[in-house]
Image (cartoon, helix red, strand yellow):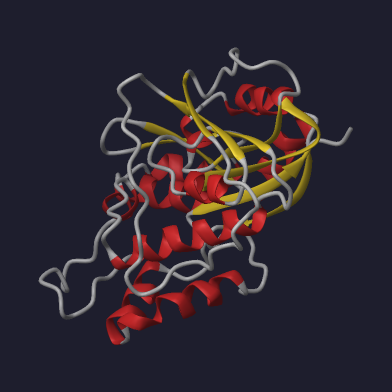
Length: 274
């Protein structure tokens, strides 16, 4: 699923799905590409007017600084008081287009809380919710988390989700020799996948994500893979031309609509009709 270029010491040892996606090595070519695409997608999704946003994606999510720079007030939920906010990665060979400088810079506020239970926030208190960085896949009772997102959204508000796909789940099951479970995975109503580190993730098809959104009283705007280009393709192209990062990102953003059996992560945009 992931092959390093022949110029690297590990050229004869492709990394497994778990090794590739369990830890996001932000300095690797693929992950620099992945987060550049994610940042560009966030930039396209953000409201056009200054808004109040709730970010559930964790302290290392790179979309938050972009939202603040675009003039939005962002409340970021942290899992603990000592959670460190990491500086966003700056790409050496290009990055997503920076939005025009707004008339005002947004404000960033950190709040400690549980991203699954948003009890600290009143009903209809946010214009938008960002649940990126696979946060909903780590909430195994995702329906309850989705209902909380719907509760805190104002009528007309929008939310952006990123979850693990069945593609990733099946790769992990195969890697760990869970063959009976793998045979039932495509038709399972709920697919919970163990990771080698002992954690569990919940994986989705586009249809399952669409149904869950509707059950929460939200309306799906679109759902698609976060990336269509494979890790091996990205690293091969960057190995040939290290300056091609921005072209790869643009290629991804203009990729034709693909079904959910392409990417390891799915992203979806929803709206709360009022």
